Image (cartoon, rainbow, N blue to C red; front, top):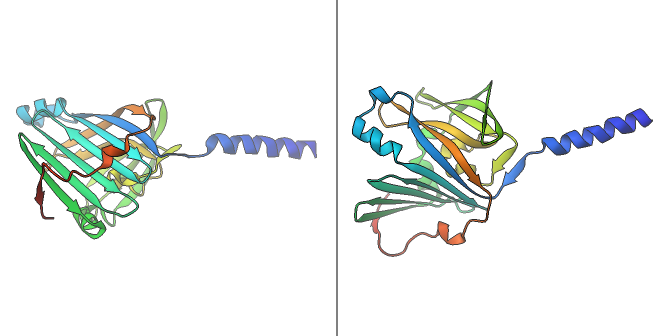
Length: 211
């Protein structure tokens, strides 16, 4: 009987330590690099090295900002409604595109019907033990992600292709539109509250574009 109680106790402790925690409030900063600098346009590479991506999550809301010296782009997404907005600034020009849930899904159609292969490869990012997964899109292209399995963002769709990943993606690959892979790696996680105004969609100062 005593042996059984010990097993139950240690089983409960193990379960408590292995539980996944949902992160509903955070700011994550990602550094950007390319896998083959010699094959990349020098001017574009210089701009890329000066660029930073920041992801904000608060409850059902997420915002992803990509800031570079020549332009900025933000994706604002509401998980509760499925609505999204894209903000773009190029010089003095500001553009806004609003999308409902159907339009947002269409915008990300290339990520539908993807498959995920989980591997045994791991690495530590910001103190989190991260597992590697390989995502294959329906066009046959692949890219890898490293995710922390013990924390999960309340809005996985801060990148639409991550919505089926069972953890918080702290490193991932993306294409530059041609052949080069760009690598985003988390360099800082701040768990302090995010101001709600960060997710407000501007009503003035932007030229409204149709989807």
